[in-house]
Amino acid sequence: MQVCNPYEILIQGITTKGKRFRPSDWSERLSGILSSFNTGRLSYHQYVRPLSVDNVNCVAVDKKLAELHPEMFQFLMDFAQDNDLRLVDCKEMGEAESVIETAPQAAPVATPAPTAAPKPVQPAYTIKEVLPPDTDLTFDVMKELRPSLLTAQSYTNQVDNIQRGAGYRLFAVFVPEQKEAVAVCGFRLTHNLVWGRYIYIDDIVTQQTFRRRGYANALMDAVTVEARKLGCTEIHLNANVSPERSAMHSLCYNKDFFIASHHFRRNL
Image: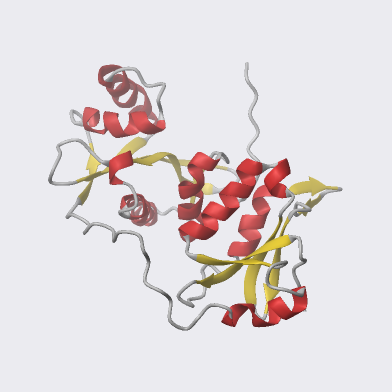
């Protein structure tokens, strides 16, 4: 039986309401964020490792990570919080093996009602493909993801006159209370020798005031349906590892994305 150590924090694949977290390999995917290649093999980081406890997938995080890599430590804690996963401090819970054996039953049967204010009722919304001459309706939300964008006109010119020619398309979420899009996903159909015919997502973002309403999730579903219609077997995207993108990382894991490779960049 695998155990966690007193100096580790255990992220359990069980929510505070007792539901098992999916997908089944989430712990390997999450641990893979800090993995590296060593002698030709992929190795997990010494401070972040997946393990199984009583048939429950978990991730053990060494507390030293908070000092050596605070941003990544916070990302892992935010991931647990965003997905309502149980956190167990192995030291505070007593002997490691004892903790592991009782961890799945550690939470009380009746979960106390949250003290936070309930989320507002989600308004009606529509998802549609944005085509010229309406490209500028996505500028305000896209600028939150791409702050280097200067004006709606220059953005529209680049999308309509350059990127659309390479297959770039825009799906967006619209709500009744405003004309402009509140969430947008930019993607393109492409193909290569490695992955064949696939969709690549270049941009996906929700306006700050409209987040946590499921709009990015709905956009991802819409792109998935479109990818299947186009005969694609894969969807790809890049997501920065900064803590600011933790919500995006959670979305990717929840939609069954996995870390397939290291992305290398060279500035010229």
